[in-house]
Image 1 (cartoon, rainbow, N blue to C red):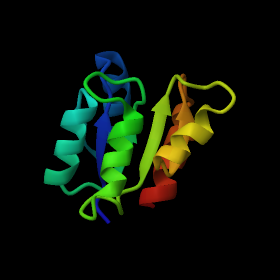
Image 2 (cartoon, rainbow, N blue to C red):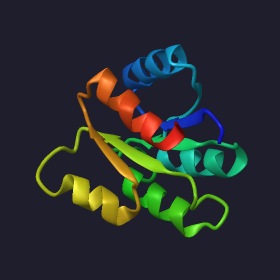
Image 3 (tube, rainbow, N blue to C red):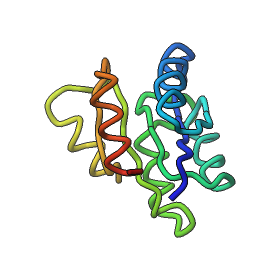
Image 4 (cartoon, rainbow, N blue to C red):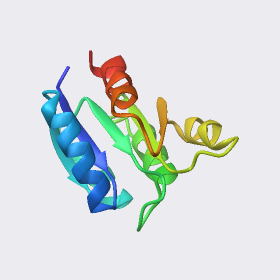
Length: 121
């Protein structure tokens, strides 16, 4: 399985944090800044995992996840929601959309890396 991770996140600071954390752990990072471009990128790039923000421009993370899971070419890629939506029921909503995992922001770097390793080894 590829160690490439697609980060779909609209906030530059959050992308930078994820880029620094994941690249220092040996992962290759590709990035998209909105849900629509993230879906397109997932279809073009071989990736082993997608980290999906939920609050995104163009299409939100729920819809982007539904589209990726509906497509036979991308449905096998695990998607982890990394989101500030952390109220009761938000994790269930992300999982109903098709997310395979969930990490609330602000996240512990150790916890996020554990979640990534759960899917990528």
